[in-house]
Image (cartoon, rainbow over all chains, first blue to last red):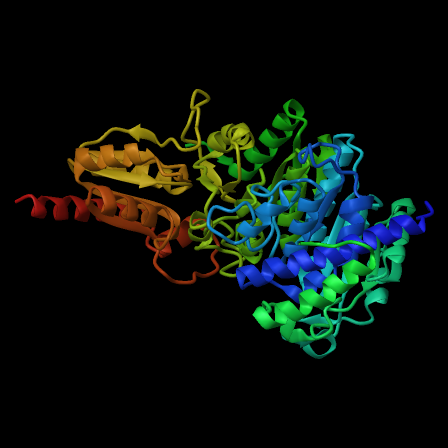
Length: 286
Length: 316
């Protein structure tokens, strides 16, 4: 496992805050989107897009790139922001999100947006798709890894576990699944809607290596991704405990912010909080 | 008339084509022995994936293989693809992944297993999803020849296969193309447009009609989508009377497609042979089941007579 210097962790932490502001601004401007599950996943997406994934913004279709499937496609505002700031397309273009003719759909579209490896938005698909990608890579002697980010509500989908069984059958050690365990889904807390615990035991029973972390702690995210890469003979799942709506005090842990855009006052308040945090890293943002 | 297994012809062709094209992969949901992908499995175990009874994941998994540059043939019973309708729509059709969905045991051809296994609505579902070509083969020759055609078609295809031993219609010179209908008998009074095993029944009906002085076209419309509108319009113009025939519901399948196309371009007298909005039954024979649900040669003849009569009444 590579040691991650404080300076790197701090830089990525700062980017995670900037992406939160970007995502929230996009959702506010469009009057639509999913704040809660985008904000909870910011450290995970930041760690992947800005550090861990072997990707090249100049070659979005590079055959040997690592693949990232945002199976919880409703968190796409944050991914679009990450890809923009990583150089896949201009940050300015994010303003077109959701307009007719825009390259950014309401959920990820692999054919429209550079850097999006798979079309998602309906829960449950990512692991089975990822398993197919891993096996195609083996047949074609391509050396890439596949990362799939799923939601915790998504762990209620049957097809997710079908995909997990397939990944186990073929010992897909090149597959890393990350569960954004933010404890809240559209209609309320996961334990009230349909309990998914014991979640770690479930994944163990499906023959995955399991790692449990604080998914809003950048260093833990970076370390877990490294460890998962080293595990042989089986796929790995990182259960990333996060806070829904993380970074905006009045959104944290609240189901009502799953798919509701902030109004003008709410956005101003959230923006102020996030800007204050970004300033603490010595950065000003327009 | 010689009969040959459509699924076996498909299975052998897949194994042969797999030797030629190393990108071809086969994925199956625990029905390898039934849908005859075992020949491919024996020859190319490294490109064969049995994913168990996971039809939804079968489709997503195949989409993943396609993203990685393979040409996956995903196989299960036609009825079971209904279980994966959303996966097909999202991960295959909308995402435009180069997946070939092969629905075997189509229509009433799994007569012994009964109505749970029969399927009357798969074409209707597939046809209304954008980006998917819908193809049904009429005999073993067409099944064999369609394999490379499907593999080399750029984009998603739904290939519908009957479980039956079907009379062989075509010879080795026949070259099916996706999107092209084949006029296999010329006519002037009525056009019988069919897909799958109903093509042979239409040929028999045309022979009977000829003895009655009615000259019938027989068209093999193996591609239901994109529909070969040129041929539909030509036979409609030549005859003014159309009969469609399919082992599928009259709603949303070949008959539906032709009704829609003619309604918008050239309204023509139309009679549809197919399953008439009902679930079916178990039977000891496929032929008896088709006959029971009013898809017999005699039913086609009667429909043709009626279409001709209605057309003449319009033109008096």
